[in-house]
View 1: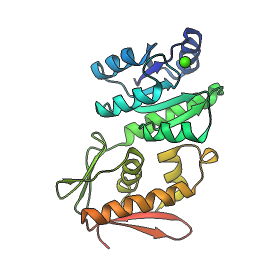
View 2: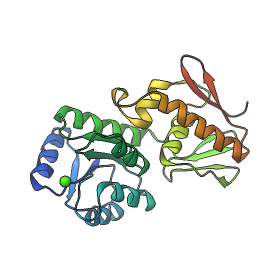
View 3: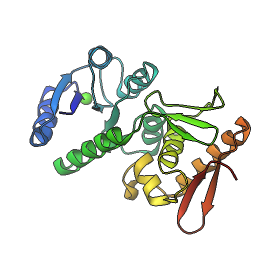
View 4: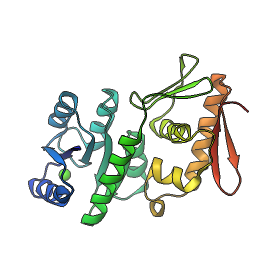
Length: 224
Ligand code: CA
């Protein structure tokens, strides 16, 4: 059974989220603040967390950064009252996998949590593509034992391409897997991040390359 942590300081909202997720039969844990959430997440295995951005003390962004720093490998969905670009960018930079603006539809929340869990379970141990090694659990990539300095989004992009290395991954799939629902993100963000990852791959000296397949998407090849 998947274990889902709900972090929200408002008791009514916390109960509501639990009720919305109840039909999916998760084993849920709840926390009212970031410190408690961090303690729970580092002490017991969790699969996903639904984290409200507005928390007393440590906010949701900060909690997310702490979780990643502690290498807690869970899917994180951030709940935000604000749908502004700055919040979205801050959320993604802090290592969240997805975000949902309040107020949200119950069905939408359930679908997002299911998607997070699917992504978690699909992850293999370590993926090797040419001289690149991608470790989804540690969220680290290496080229011949030298680490690549990638942001969380860059890593997620490389990981998604690596899992299906040698196969074209549609741009829309990359957008959905790495960012979230296509209607909320500009697909050009994919191209932008592919260019960042390409630069870092080139700098690392790897033989692996990201090939553009015009009109379709991108493919990670072990060598050019
Ligand atoms: Ca709150």
